[in-house]
Length: 311
Image 1 (cartoon, rainbow, N blue to C red):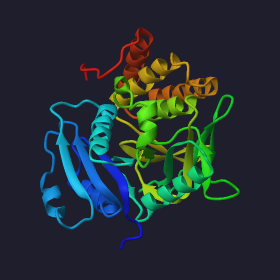
Image 2: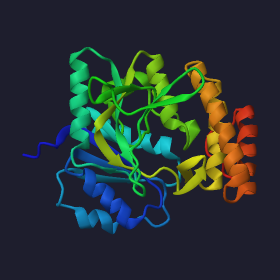
Image 3: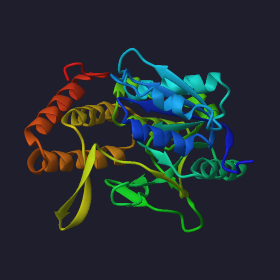
Image 4: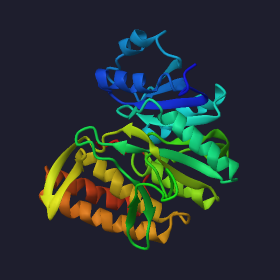
């Protein structure tokens, strides 16, 4: 019996033009930890179907592929997979990106942390692992929102579980019972700020978010990363220019939500300003980035949501 196998967990893996080798590694990392893996493909031009056939019969999990006719975005893709997981009897849903590779005991440690909190009558909405950058090996912490800034904590003094205000969607474990009460992901956001919005909506309804310090996952932030010397060495994630449209637009859309705390609004505004200064002046392809930021601000002020088909 595999001690890391969680029969009540279904993994939802959203893909878009995935790299064949990376997707295979992602599947191998999780397929013996969960009962089912629901792959939702957002209309990839060349999805590597042979990856599924190559792994068939070699894993504990059932593999299911749902191919969408058009790219509906990360939020809609997650929702399709969550609904499929619920229909197939899952009690917990593990959300994954196509390039996120879970440590061999990640899911079991998240489940154990949930059980420990549940025994204390804590209303848990989501738990997430620490993420390791595949390039530099840097481990992330868990984020709380201060009065006007984001505060990163690695773990609680009294144990491995630390309360957070939001988590990355990838790697997060969500109880189906909670999803039925909070609702699913906001599809109008399409791709960015989806995880933040859901976490704060859940917190507004009285649930709590936790990071689990002894659960780990390899996950790459940004399309690529580069070490920048600015007072000190720091690894900066670079996105394709169109992503800045959604980052800025969705930030403004979330400012209209009453359940988003004031501290987050101020801290996010500061972060967006830093993003504009860095990537608009010192980053690569600055004019394209600035253009997308400007378009995002205009559409955010107009209340435009969903996919922008202009790019």
